[in-house]
Image (cartoon, rainbow, N blue to C red; front, side, top):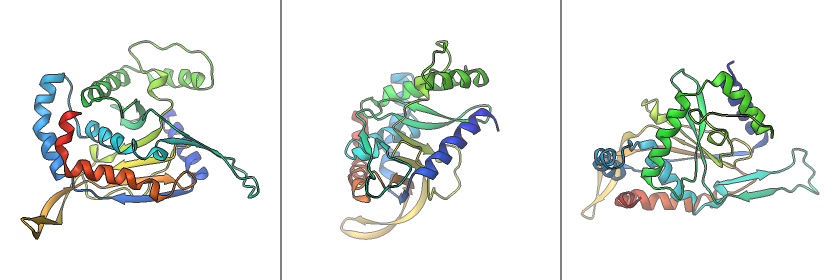
Length: 265
């Protein structure tokens, strides 16, 4: 295994063994959202100098939902040894939504890079951040980078040039969001994602798929083709129950029902 795969293997095995997972697949109708997105995309590049991608847009949509579901953007610290009389832990709710987003690099490796403070940034700021991360990732020699990153994570000192990735680009994510729709258009969706400890939630976006849905048109129910984006939500059952996720789902439903709101982001 190369060092990237080894780190992924370690973090997922650790998360799988320590976290009691619950998984829910949400299948929203994003037809209206995609229509507004397409109408914005070309002018966005001209105005801001960066591409507006579906991935960037969805990170902002998810961040809006996370604002009203704080346990989903949190860290948990609990003992491994279960003593029923004293079993307790600490749940830390984060003010900043720092999304760890798996990045598919030109050499075929996968690396989770941090999109910081997604809840407070505009779409233009998020697009600029994504561009900068991509440029720094392409300029990074990972065989030399990873040993220095590990040194930094363990509290040591290591130097990094301005052109390459920085430790803050990989450390301290508060939630993981994987978009397989960006690399695979085949029909299907996640059933389960591994929650990366100490995070409490992982979200997986699948490719948008055309499916029939019952819609109300002029007071009548009709079956129409719609654009559906399966979204898998896995969470740590120690940190929350499904009722803690409901505000997140309700907020996303509001956005998808009135997608013109994204023009103000």
